[in-house]
Image 1: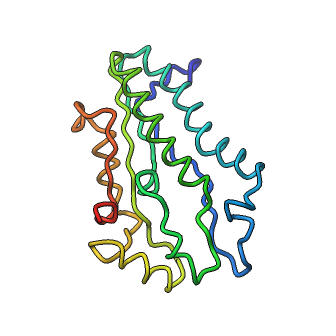
Image 2: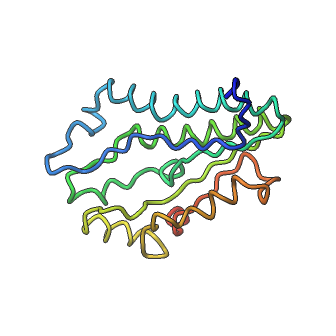
Length: 186
């Protein structure tokens, strides 16, 4: 982007490894069995990847004294996963998912304070679960934890993302917007 003089206004960090349930038991995802290699890979892709993109593109944006960095965390960056909802699916939400999503929030706040003086805004969204072909038992259990009684539809975050990337949110930085149907309030 340096040679072609392309101006980059927005960076959205959304990389993450999210393990999905399988028919076999996922004992390797249990904390006591979780491999260090999985830990390293998850943090490399999800947290270090966001850090490196923020470092490179944020530095570039600082030269223009304007930009938006939007990090995608999760409601599991605010609360711990409730392992009970995975019980019948032979699945355990791995430790790294929550660690990474908490780390994304820390990166967001640090970046907002670091580059605020350069007019670079950095915020995060903490979306709740998105309906995506999950097991019906899981959906029933998680819906009971959400005041709206359902998981999000894929497109329901579009407006929030557009708002945070636009000048409509020009005085918002360092914030974490939780959009989880109310799950984290109870």
